[in-house]
Image (tube, rainbow, N blue to C red):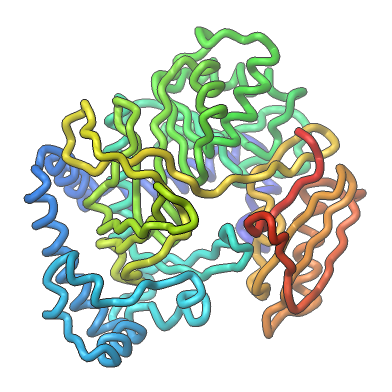
Length: 458
């Protein structure tokens, strides 16, 4: 029996106890001495001038390039093919000697980017469907996990948060089994001081339970994907609940593009400022908002380049070289996300590059008959399915889901059954699921390819 099945079969109190156990493990791995040292260094670097930051980046880059040449098959071949050696990459200006890296490069053979000298026991593997609808296998080491956690916690401190403060987290994670129809729709992790609220059970009918849970928990902050918080805020506003109801002082969003209309409603309902964080599954670049509300490139995370887009005047593509993930180094990785550059300084006085709007992932909503709403339909539908090259999911109506997909070499009936079970487990057994296998998924020439399309109005 899988860990998820064991978790689901336990009562709510025991599920919270299991989350508490996981929380102790996470804190041990992610908030130990290494993490504290990283956070301290990051906080001191806020006061560096631009020259000192650049010097620090170049030293880190030199170490990463040498490691990549020596231990990563893909880069060993690339360097030899180009006739260059690590000593030729002395700083970020020399990165241009290397070609850009694309998602397709990584997707074709992810093992080619995995460092041969890394202990696999300390490497974390995950899959992402991404905005292309094509699964991508990625690796990161424990050092990278700790470093990203330190980056995130520094921003939380900008928002006035400390380790002793409580956080409410609205998650698209199966914290509460799909079949549960009555509250509590949340679980508590004591060591993390987090109340995990199930996004999968959120509906207009259930929102009063969520409001009471947040109010009783008295968190100093709430965190979630922007669209999830928008749904929650929209329901709360419709019921006329005042922002004075909540103890929230800061809001942390990440994982998708924060739209201006969403920001306005979320901040109005919760009565606090949003601190948004841009990152990506490949861990190539990081951008975050400060206490003055401006986006900044976080230079310790990596070297971020901006590729001008001829089709989008005034906009650039974000290209990242993360300096912390030695398990799977990605040099000059094209994220496919766009940004607008600003030349102005920020009143926060940090010498970090200021960015305007970021254009990343925008999600349609998967809507159930009972009013529940899910944001990441691709993850929900394709969870545990590795043998698909590309997919497109379409919600035709409340009773019908169509899934077009290009099968991988090892695709089997087991994968089909897994997809069907995933959809029906969340939406209900009465939902019709149509699977359409093809060799190519046609794009609408007038719009960008979308992995999930909903024809149901929210």
